[in-house]
Image (spheres, rainbow, N blue to C red):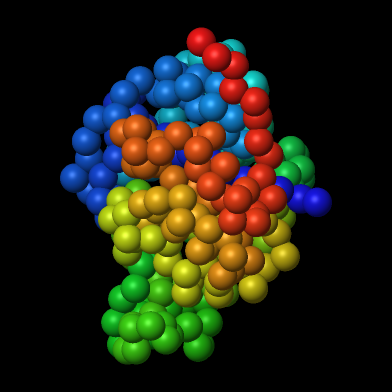
Length: 279
């Protein structure tokens, strides 16, 4: 039986792990290498490492940090932020990343998804999609990838729009149609981060997660809004998401990876549990 994955996310800014609300109001959460080691020891299934200001600032991700994490941790990890070309992807893979997460670059030039899949395989090719609810009138005026962008049933009169550059720029793309496109180009996984939910701890956006997960045939990682293990249970049960990603609840010690996975296992979800050694 395939297990559901629990994935901590390190949002990194200027060499430090940070966390904010709705992609802003960042506060420090610690050293990325030390935090990564802790999650590895706790039995995290994977790690996602995102340099959240690299694309906005037009700079490369810090390769030294990627190498240090690869040297210290045994779990698979995905790296994103600041990727602009296939050469950037190559450098990250060579530095030790198992997968790369492409966000802004995939919108600006979708061919990078195809190039990455052709060179490193679908399993290494992840696309991160950051949708936000916007008024349908605005979305229809900007939308370029479909004549019928999806309208929110939970918030009538609003639709979902893809944003780039760390959530700063609306780009006129319906996320459902966009998700189908990147999968056709070779994406083997999608990380779906709700901008409306990010950092709120109010729970994942079940509506958009369900829409995306039902539209594609690759694993979808639910992200944005986790405030408790129960939120993870909800998104994994109510949608076809394969994994749940969280940051704040782990970074600030509200829950450990181990107790989160034990809670979900008791709720009937398939989990990979590890036996913790006593210190």
